[in-house]
Amino acid sequence: MLIEAVRLVVTLAATAVGFSIGRGAPGWTEAATNPETAAVVGALIGAGVGYVLGGLTGRFVRRGIDRVPAVVDRVSGAQMFAGAFGLVAGLLVGAVAAVPAIVLLPEVVGWSIGALLVIVLAAVGARAFVARSEDLLAAAGLANRRRPSREAEAPRHFVVDSSAAIDGRILDLARTGLLRGEVTIPGFVVDELQGIADSGQINRRRRGRRGLDVLEALAEAPGVRVAVDERTFPGHPEVDAKLLALAAELTATLVTTDHNLAQAAGLRGIEVLDPQAIGEALRSGPIAGDLVTLVIEKAGSEPGQGVGYLEDGTMVVVENAASAIGHTIDIEIAGALRTSIGRLLFAKRAA
Image 1 (spheres, rainbow, N blue to C red):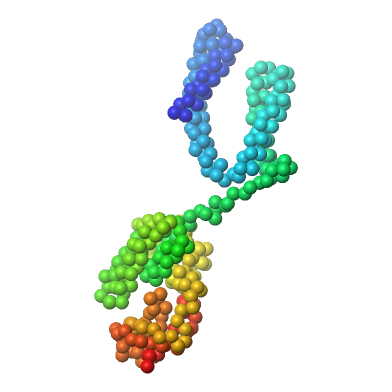
Image 2: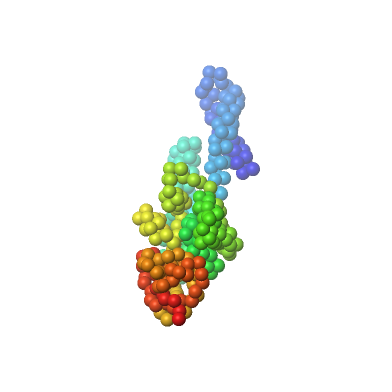
């Protein structure tokens, strides 16, 4: 509707201009030897040109109007007020400056130059007043009330790794409001977790199912919008390389507890969120002397050692527990070691 309205106005104006030119110059074509014929031909040509230019102008105007909300959203009230005042001042100055051109120059040329002066000076006035809006308001004794920055409130974008899903603390971050915005789950990560969940090993199957359950619960967290990205990135055979490519393409934060992957992402300029590192920084966890119930899942690197994991994924190395693999035992924490991949606990079987 707007495009057609602008086209109508431009077409009528171009028709009038063509009519005036044709009537004022009857000999401008061989076919038009009298004022009436020349005026009709000029009006037809003006109407055709105006119809085309009107459509282009209408689309340009509509795009400009569609961009107004986004532009206004980035402008403070002080800048809008100063810009409006500068626009009016520019119009007045332009109108005064256009009078000599209209009076001294031929009608067609004078009015064209006058209109150009008004438009240019109005734009200059608006831009100048916007640039000095704070000083102008201060000079007028008006306070400039700043709006809260929208950039700080802008939702962030995250890409989730399988290690973060299995860890599960990403769900706690989302529920407490520390993780909000767009969360993209790559399709190949879902496939990886599905493969782990279908594993023949009980521990791997449990970890895979936990990861899938965390992703499903993440979609119900407040302020989080979850989407699955099915792109496969065939140029990158490894899953880690695919994750880095996707995070870089989306300009997203990579959520992972994989230390090596986090280092690779950092080297490529990709922001990383490590729920495990946040958890380690915020909690003290079990300390020496605490009694803990633990499932021994596998043998350790030294003879007689057993290895288990706390609910948050912290590895616990237990002395003389190799014979208890697959069983739940009571242990006593003996010490802790902070490594590059997290916190490592050492324990012994409780007496």
